[in-house]
Length: 399
Ligand SMILES: Cc1ncc(COP(=O)(O)O)c(C=O)c1O
Image (cartoon, rainbow, N blue to C red; front, side, top):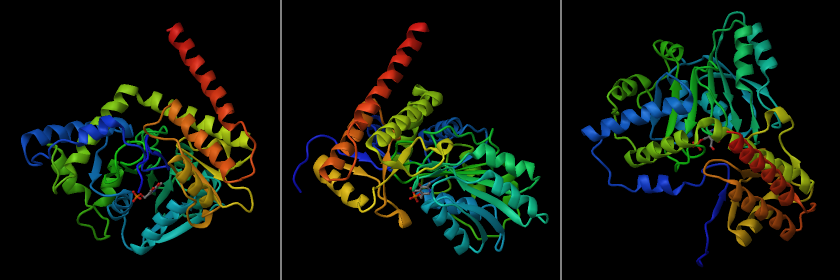
């Protein structure tokens, strides 16, 4: 393949671009994972994860993709035949549901049209009906990466509480953690599932379970078979910063650096940055005359935007042209959205100019591919970002 100058734009909604600081941190000799230096690193990382998940509870790290952390959440807390209530918000919620069924759980699925999030009212109503408390867990994908819809987790928590139901609450934050505000403790989540390759700005390969006391208690009687995924052994070893197996040492170097970067920027600033870039993207999409897949503005995702193609035009043909002409990867439409949407990832190591480059690539690609649209999306986004920057410098002057 011929050399392509300049950086590839990896604007899929994860894995995201890995910043140089993280790449440099990973590029160190692997150390003895049973040695004294490692214990110090381990403790710093485990403490830093509490900051990222906004929790005082343990966060378990797996050398696995996010799918592993999904499985860990279920097998650590549930028994064969247990009922779990899930909402089919899109492709990833469907995969989690299929996994639960394969593990021998009985899944009850609340359907959506893949254009909105989990409905707190429907969840509350179903839990109220369940007088015998047969439902043992409610599982929700916080940010559905296939659709660009963010479910309102605090409202789901309120609905569970209002129903007076003891079900565990499990939330997948794989494409929201460290990008969209998420509070494991304050929002009363029992198990939070996350992955390394999106807001944490790392390569794929690590995943996480943040675990509440109630979840650990449920684990004492949970009968699903588990060995590698078992929390207790890992949490016990973590007390001194070690792991009961060989950890992904070099990815942990990267995680240590990524947490440091998040601390330096500050979580509120990280969330505000993602919100700004998402809003600018949506303004561009509307200016192009295209439709955003998410139908509820209160549930717009701040990490990605799924854009619907005009009838008769194929999203993958557009993506192919953009990749060939501008060396930018955009997210494909998954399962029933194949060909119908493309997804713009605006998360992770991303700034105003990466946003403008991304949107320019889309606008030029739409023209090149002959997709009917109006010009001016990039201009609209630019004007919005300028307004935001003016606001920020006014804040600085006032301070
Ligand atoms: C919301 C969500 N959940 C789960 C997964 C599965 O994670 P992985 O592909 O890392 O196993 C993904 C992957 O993109 C995701 O976006």
